[in-house]
Image (cartoon, rainbow over all chains, first blue to last red):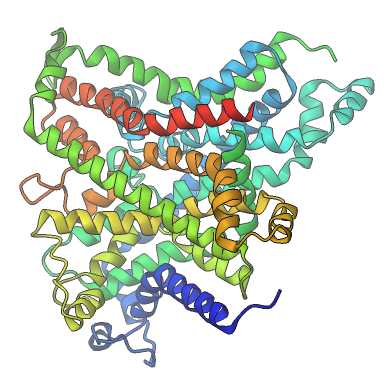
Length: 276
Length: 289
């Protein structure tokens, strides 16, 4: 079918508009973090500028906290990913293979409970966390982040395990392997795609979250978004250059990761949305 | 294959344990707490429904609820509309599809805090580029720190920007799952592209649209960080949303009973807002069966 040039032109215009909407805020912050002060505020934004790293140097010097926080974010994100996968993979397998009513009912329960907003549970968790001595620890944040993605994780893993033929389980059983052995040695590796999709969700959430860090981290477990928010709150004159440098450092790794893992994100979302 | 009940239990135990310890258990405790008068340094005592009565009698709560409802409804429906249009555009065949997908998904990777940095800068009345643009075309400035309505507009813009990738991806995946042969058949029967959309695409996409709407309505109702980082609910508590109201009750005024009651009202509120879509989805599922 031949398309009229007018349609093609309209499409291109729409795509350009979409690209500007999506990217302009990101590009503005990243490029501005490399501009000398007098060019940050130029209207329209200058595209040709001699890049400088002085805002990054200032960030290092004035906010050493920020880099400690980046380390904390890394630890918490890694921990959350491990916990979420360790819980979602066996649950997803159970929901894919065991058809008993109570097993399937508990899958539904996972989803229903997830309707409760995170901020609602922060209040009752507060005294519990203090009593257990978990306040302001990496472990606590990792557990919180993992828990809020266990439901989606189990649903996504079930969808991926459903694709793995049951004959493999039966063959393993004939060879004398138990369920756990079957899962670990045979089925889980075949569902690796699903595990990657779950990991993408958890990593983005744990790396970026503000709410839980704001409420439960005070000093030791402060994450990067929390320190970034303190920089915004610094009301006696926002130092935009340093703020942009910090935002860029916080954003760059997860943005690169999401773009690289794009395929898995899409696969996970369609599995989670259609089956959940 | 035979396996013990212990194996089955063991496999779902980690997930169920986390959910029970972090969400379900605390939520139950919250029910109890919502019927108590409780604050630091005083033993809780049973007060019946008076926490609920107090919150429901608080003008600030109603303003927060109104703000939340407006922002959520505007944001979610804008997202659905834009997401649907984009899904149709992408499915119609576009150049640089992979690159464009990466570009559209990019905001998904941005944290709420970094997004606030971006939008605060762009709309800064003195130095922002969006402000300069608005001024140049003679539109009024977005005075988000002074005018409550403008603050909520900025919060809405920010939310749409952050969550459009999610809504778009659900709709796009659903659109790609529709078989191409139907469109072939429709074309042979002489259907115009618009008729094909109206009679084929839209009806077949309804379940996906409903699911995206439900997800987003329930999740958008939790809106906290964007508002907190932009306006802290100010000026004079005028841009508060329910989650910010809850936070202030709990952690600033130490009214734990009131905060607990607000928590349950928040859950009920989000379900009520989502109810029309939930009913539609059940109906769609029944019709399909």
